[in-house]
Image (tube, rainbow, N blue to C red; front, top):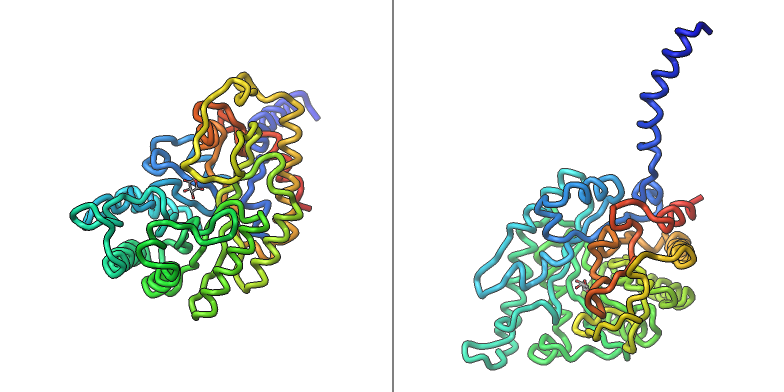
Length: 371
Ligand code: GLA
């Protein structure tokens, strides 16, 4: 080869190689495409186009989305008769333009629901009939607008206590134990084609698993269909034990429903003295010893986190006949809610992308588990 020809080759390689290296970055959605969808939760800021870099990463890596806060009752329906569709409409546009599977979170919950929902004009608890009417109006209005566009709905969020009993929420107090039957029935009527989900945290814990099984079986005995159980994966380095996680996935699948992992993150920080999970009202005082990795994550913890993520994904992958979706609660460590829960102002490392949106060793470990 002449000197001239070889320098032309080198020149061409010099152009191609960097491009090839950039495109060699594997993606979660392609890696798991034969197993389950992989998704991320989006903040309103990101949905409204104020973080281009994060959205580019989302489009590259994920094939399903969930809005982190913007489809909760307080955002969508802040006052009687007042609905706010701006962010949700934009969310649907993004999902549609990318051909992504869209999830709505969440219709009926005890948190982030304004007081007026449960009160009469004097501020006293309203009656069962009025609350059922409000529930129906809320579900019909929102689901009809996005019928055929949003495929999956968290219909009821967090109805079960850690001991497996039904949470004594205002929904239960005012309507009664049968409020879940109504919520799922209204949702089914509003969009018969949608996947309807019951979503909760700590579902890998035995008592809560049993309580959830009992509740879903009861709904089924009344002819009310739940399509999927959403296991919020707010995990840490030890909770849940993999055996317990598998036991729940298997038990839920035996009900004839799908399992979806809906809010995955893995905290590396010490958990103050309260039950594991995500009861969002629980907050603890900041102490420096609760925030050990402010200056960066030591290599050994980075490795432990990678191994922890890999072992979780090995379980998901093994049960991919039962699991249709795995959604992370956020995209990157910087914007994860875990920096502020259950203690405000800490530095956590709960996701697969770092504060510069770069893949972490945990990302590589997850990608590698797939044969
Ligand atoms: C729960 C809810 C989510 C969110 C998280 C914290 O898991 O389901 O909507 O509020 O807590 O971000």
